Image 1 (cartoon, helix red, strand yellow):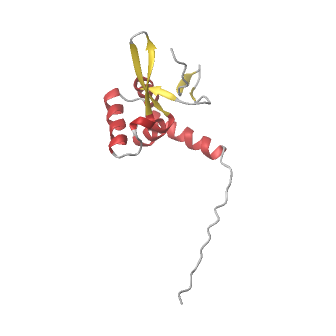
Image 2 (tube, rainbow, N blue to C red):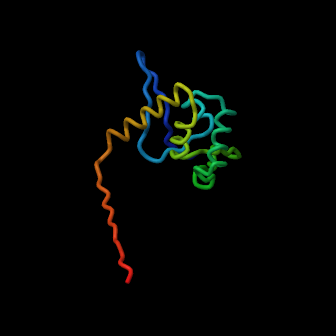
Image 3 (cartoon, rainbow, N blue to C red):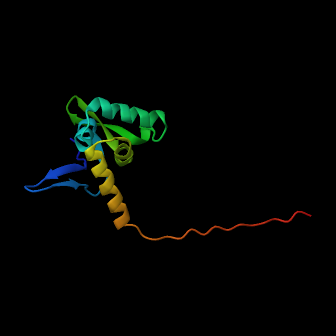
Length: 123
């Protein structure tokens, strides 16, 4: 069985916390449904829409892993997780969006973009 990192809700006595481990994220449909608080058919429709709109390609975003002798599982990468967080409309999806945005803002390093324009003269 292959080890994977997944995003999950950790429940403590007085609060619930979103745990995002470091490393590559690969999550199954049931794990994604739990994360976003939606039913699997709604999740599948959202994933199909991502593929149809070509926001992500299936060959880049998913892979099949072996979980037992003759059992396989389709898992999705972090890009799909992020896209679903912004596509789905549930309390948990909003919480995931908020947490992702906070982490991006917290780790944001300023950068500069230098644009050069050249004008040519026609003679």
